[in-house]
Amino acid sequence: MNIYVGNLSYDATEDELRQHFGAYGAVKSAKIIMDRDSGRSKGFAFVEMENDDEGRSAIEGLDGSPINGRNVKVNEARPKSDNPRPQKQFQNRGGKPPRKRWDND
Image (cartoon, rainbow, N blue to C red):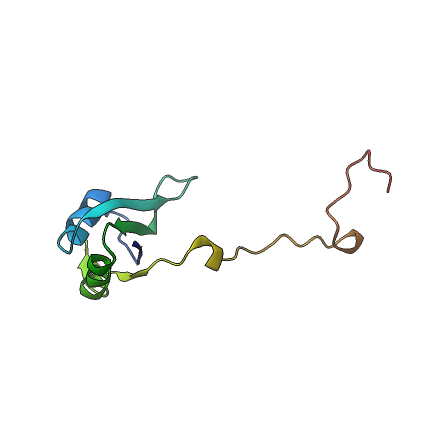
């Protein structure tokens, strides 16, 4: 089960997440999402538990509990297909992408 952890302290580590979630079962992975420009945590993470029942137990036990001084929001992660990113809207030429210099249409 893939679990979303939000409102995470910027100082939290993946090892701390493994420790907290490990109290509920086997943790397959813990990944804090980092900002690529600053290299700092974005304040959320994903934890993958090997067993769905243990994952649900971890969600119930840790949602709203403090990790590194902040009460975290914990719930089952939605699949990427459920998280639509905004599509680029091309305003010129009737919704077509911008024309390159050598296009003649």
